[in-house]
Structure formats: structure tokens, C-alpha cells
Length: 98
Length: 497
Image 1: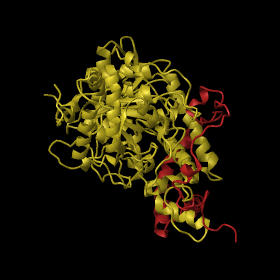
Image 2 (image 1 turned 45 degrees about the vertical axis):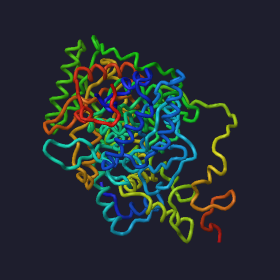
Image 3 (image 1 turned 180 degrees about the vertical axis):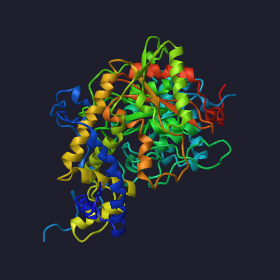
Image 4 (image 1 turned 30 degrees about the horizontal axis):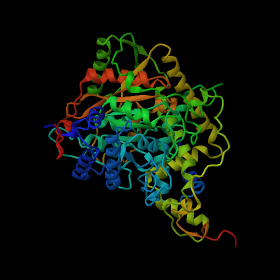
């Protein structure tokens, strides 16, 4: 299984990463090796098998719901305390609309 | 006079409760030991001042006869658990200055039970690795050395700072997380007990997510008894984690009788792999023999999808990681790099902030979830994951527990293996299946290799069988009579007696 340069660049864009050209080549080679090994999964007959999303899905019918009650957890200042850039009660980001 | 550093927690606790020693003396001794072993790079953040203040509070409670169950336990916490007001880096440049405004449920439970946090320990970046070599803080060093060889060895990973710290005696117990073996493998390579509980036993709230359907917190300790004590006070339902199960948590310690008569212990033939280190194979056979001598029955079993567990893991874990790590965008916390547009800012931040292994796994995850690949890879992996679970379900109709080696090799030298991802991934070969199936498993130190390094054996049980699994592990520990020379050699300025 070959993971092409083109596919690496596509994944890189989707993941909001920006690799230098030399890294794209390197990842293409390395991931091709990883996926050739992963391809052994095609040997397994999975006809009619229900995907296992979470190991608990056989124990519980559905995710338990908690009561919808208001709790005081993090305050605005807590939430903003790690912001790289902020103004009043807002996170600041580069201009989005022209 | 013996050093208090030599005692495990159950022994230390009796001395604290009988007022023979003070919590402050214990904490001071451990701080001194942590300072003495700083070269191991086990801790990435030390919280000694608050530990001393907590020790004084513990002493007040002990004086008043109001001691909590884990009163005075010197605990190290993997730097993946959010700790309120204490920097939590996840060993990544992208979170280098992150100070959580809240506390993880598991650490909060332990602190409320009287445990005292000495600091945060090193790990592989985002828990992705088996050596701590991908940490932005540099690798931790295993306090064990090969006989006649001074070369530094890895402490295992990803919870390698935790294992190095407990093995060196700079903490008495440590918290780890286990997504594919990250508690059991470092425990085995450092001569410790390491337990991954059933998925859903402990809350994941406040643990920085790697792969949400696999991650689970657990203890690394010197003894099975200590693992039982710590686990009891970590576990329990948490309304903040809808995957934490609402079940009663028993007093695990009360199950440690060491009686395994009549139990059936399964030996999966697929784990007897070509190229398995002969010393590990011999120890595995010896461990089975110990169980036989204690009255258990050894049963050959088959887990036919074992070979597929690793490739399944290397689709599911990166897929979940690529989704979980999308939140690191330079907006709300963590590193931000400048960019002319918001997209450029995201890209520059993420490219600069994530190390190479994390980047590789984000790319694998993004690729397997992208249109055209989802069904072939992600969905297929989830179906094979069920086959792996069914193997265990079938096996547990015949046996009570499964016995396997924890690792395929002993600890290797710092620097080795990092260049070949496949060789590195194979480190997880005996441990990942249980994460895929959500099962509890425990590694117990069972012997030494020819070069004098510790080797671990793993016991796997059915879901939520922790109490009886700990008892089987206790029996194995008693039979193996493993004594870490590192603990025997510990000295401190606070002798007791």
C-alpha cells in the first residue's frame, strides 16, 4: 500500500499542519510502510460483524444521561486564564472576515 | 535502623496511624530522594511546597484520629492529569505553559483520600510512545542498569516518568494512563506492579484525551496490595464522564487472600510468538508452574485474532487522537504562533507545537477518517476490534484469567528504536488487545533477566473482575518473591525504629 505525496498533502491540509517538502517525502515513505502492515486486516472476514465503537457498548444500551442541573464549574476568568490573546471576555484571533 | 523509604504504603500507613512517624517526615524523606534522583528526569514539575503543607494537614488529621484512607501517601502524577493551578504539559510544546483551572476527577479522588502530590511526571508526548523519548522535556531514565553496563536505559512508556519515580523511591505510588500498555509496560521494565482497570472503572474527566475509547487511568506501585489500595480510591462513577460506570467499588484489599485453588488460568498459544525472548518465555512457563503448584489449573487457550490487534490499534488510536487533538488551535490555551489569516495561525501553531510522533499519528488518523478511506480502514478496524473482544469472551467461558508476558523484551537503551515506528509499535504487542476489549490487566514483577533487569508477567481478567484479578496477582507476587534491589538499597535521613 502506497500513501502518495498527494494523499499526505491532503491529510496535512485537513489536519491544519504545514510540513516542509522534505517531511512530506519522509512521511510518504514511512506511512506507506505502516499501511502495508495495516493492510493485513483485509484478510479478516468481517461480514455481518457489528463495529465495536466502545468496549462498554455491550454493557449498556445507551450512554447514561445526567440530570440537567446548573453547576458552577469554570468561571469566565478561569476559562480565559490560558488564552494566548484576549480582550475583555473574548478570545482574540486573526481577522476572519475581510 | 531501617529507612522509611523502604516501606510500602500498607506498612507505612500502620506507622503513620500508630503515630510512630509523621506525614511530614515521610514527605520530607521523599522530597529529599526526589532531589537526589533529579538526573532521572522523572518529574517535570515538582510541587514540594504544597506537598509539605498537605503533610502538615495530614498530621493534624492523624493527631485528631480523623485520618483518611490514603493519609500521607507520597504520590507522583503523570503530567497528563489536569491539576488545578499546577502546570500540565502532557510533555508537549503545545501545552508547555498550560495551567489547568480545574482538577481531574481521579487526582481529586486521591487527594480527598489523603494522598499527597509530590509533582508531575514525564511521559511520551500526548502519551504516544513506549519510552518517554518523544517527550518535549527529554527522556526519563530507568533507575535500573544492566549488570556491568552504565548505559542509560528507558523506563518504558508512556507513563515512564511515573515508573522511574516509583522504582527510584522518589514516590511511593504514581498515576499512569494506559491506552495500549502505557501503565503495564513501564511497570514491567522498572520492576513494579502496574494495573490498567476495566474501561469505565475510573473517570477520564480531566485526563488529556489521547484515544477516548481506549484510555484508562491506573496505579503504578511497589506491591499488589498498594495497587489495590490506590485503585479503590481512584475508581468510581463520575457524572462528568458518561463512560464511567455506576457500580459499587469494593474494598479490593480485603480480597487479597492469595488463594487460587481451583482457578483456571489460560495460556494463549498466539502469545508464544516466534522470536519471543527465551528468558521471558522461561519465566512465563515458570509463572504457570507457580500457579499449578498453588492449586490452579493451567489451560491452553486460543485468541485467534491476536495478530490483528496491533494494526487495529494503529488505526483506532490515531483516528481518535486526530479528532481529540483538533482542539489545539492556538485560540483558547497553549501555544500560539502568528499567522496572517486564522488558517495560517492554526497551521503554524500546530506545526510548531506537535512533535514528530504526534504529527505522524495525526496524519495517520486524518487519513483513515478521510472520505474514501473511512470504510476500508476505520470501520473495518472497529469490526476486527469486535473479533478481538469475542476471542476474549470465548476464552473467559473456559478460564478465569489469562497469563501472558507483559513485554517482548527487557528495557532498552535510551535512543534506540525511535527511528523505526514499526519496531517501536511492536513494544505493545502483549498489551494492546486488552485496551481494545476494555478488559482489566495487571503486570507483576516476576523475575530478572540474565543481565539483571526486571521482567513482568501480565494477568488479564474479564470486565470488572478487578477484585479477583488483584487476588490472582497477589498470589503470583507471593510465589515470585521478587525483591527490587533498588528498594533494598534505599537510605534516608529519616530512619525509623
